[in-house]
Amino acid sequence: MRSRSYEEVRLGEWETTLSQRIAERDPVAARLFAEQRWDVIPGAESMPDFEARVREGLDRLITEAGGGRVVAVVHGGVIAEALRRITGSRGVAFLGAESGSISRVIHGVDGTWALRSYNETAHLRAAPQDDDVLG
Image (cartoon, rainbow, N blue to C red; front, side):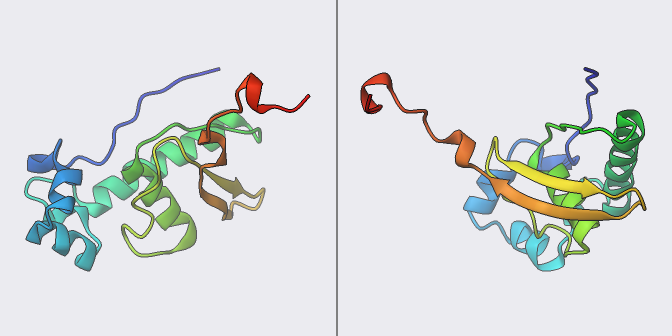
């Protein structure tokens, strides 16, 4: 199995504080959601640049898989951008996937994409303990 390292969206001055600023209702965070653009954050990556990086990464995964299945473990911004591109949704509509969740997409032989599922979390529930299983 091959492994590659890709970057999350570059958040400039907010590189480690995005969640905190959203929780604190920072006015710039409100603009982020109103305008659906990362680059309202000071020093953040532009939407076209981020879109191009994610598109390149998706294309590379498909090419390297040669028609097989691929697992990509990525951060929330990349999930949001990939699913925005696949579904034609607004800029950060899919921001907020749970950590460790699974989203499934299909890439057709004709080059089309489809979203099969988003933010699946059933696998994150605790497995039953031995004494919880009736036998």
